Image (tube, rainbow, N blue to C red; front, side, top):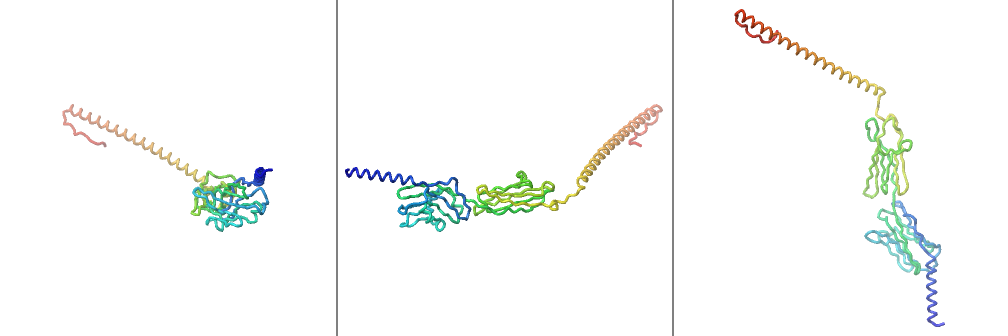
Length: 316
């Protein structure tokens, strides 16, 4: 066999070996985004489909955070003989498991997380001349404080309640429930406010009327975490504005009395108008009689040739 043929065989063998080696590994991608707690430790998975890597195999791992304006070197490991690199923002907070590398575990351990840590992380793995990468999305969330229910004021015959809680992320949802667990959304008003720290405070108010329901609860839900916190309050009858059992009959009697007054006033006005009309007619009749008397007097005086009497003004 010629040397050229030997060389070709060796190259073919190396290519086949490379293909077989490459086929041994792949990175198992996470099915969903990774959700971590703000301020706590979170692990971003990057596991190979092997639990053992030969010691002679060179291992390189890079974790890169892809922000819109830059790509941040969160943690890069180039093997035992080369120093690691890392962005100062992640120094002391991001690390790899040295024991796990030889077992195909290239996961990133991220400590003391904050909101800026959210985003897409790329795990890049080199094993000899084999290479593969996977993107891991990190979402952060926070569970807020237990809801605090307080009596604020009285509104009509009802009581105004508020429910408040803070320290949530992302923005939560608040619900008022009656004693049967039914949502009372129409009677409630909810406000969510973002704080300087980037998390959210929630405040919700509702008015509970006397005789409707004595037991209500305030529930706050973080949908990302699938968590909820609920506080319940039992309202005593003594807390409602005082009402009398005679109030309804009294209002009915008062209404009837007002109707009687209006009716009596209407009749008095009608009688007054009738009296005024009669008085007017009487005065007009008297005036007519006076005019007739004066006319008769004038005719009599002319007949007897007597001086005419002075006209009469006014009425007796």
